[in-house]
Amino acid sequence: MEDNNKKSLRELLLERRDNTSFDLLKIASKKMQKRINKVYAFKDAQKIGLYYPIGSEILTQDIIQELISKGKEVFLPKVIGKNMEFRKIEDFGSLEMGKFDIMEPKDNCQVSDELDIIVVPTVGISPSGVRLGYGHGFYDKFLEGKNIITISLVLEKQIIKNIPKSDHDINMDWIITEDRMFQTQK
Image (cartoon, rainbow, N blue to C red; front, side, top):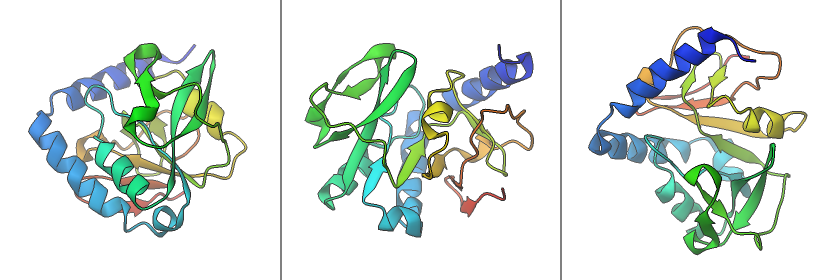
């Protein structure tokens, strides 16, 4: 069971993010799209994992579109029971409404866990890369033991000094906000 600190922190940060106007979210997302292309690991990657946004998450549709048009292989997560797998999409037509009302790749999309880099949805993060997600642990489980570079797209106001770290938490390698991008100090 996760500790109450994390739970109340998640609620606070989600509320903070949900209070961002959609216009502001669009502007911030555009800035992040420009910045992410300056990360060499992202630019050089061929197989890239991303997420389709829900609620007040950073908008990734334009990044996905741009990558597909550049001929990159784009993979989105699909939840299968207690686990998550990444499946390759050709375009947004490869998606359908899945569990949790999230757009997921259809069953005929090819599965791969050998990705170069993954953009991970983030509720909150510390400057050292300790990420607060939604508490399901799907990403931590997927990333465990794999050598995949991770990027968090997050609003500046979602960065907080200390997030309690559990043993299974995987640190993020890069943090990109509307104002800056930096590599975390592991």
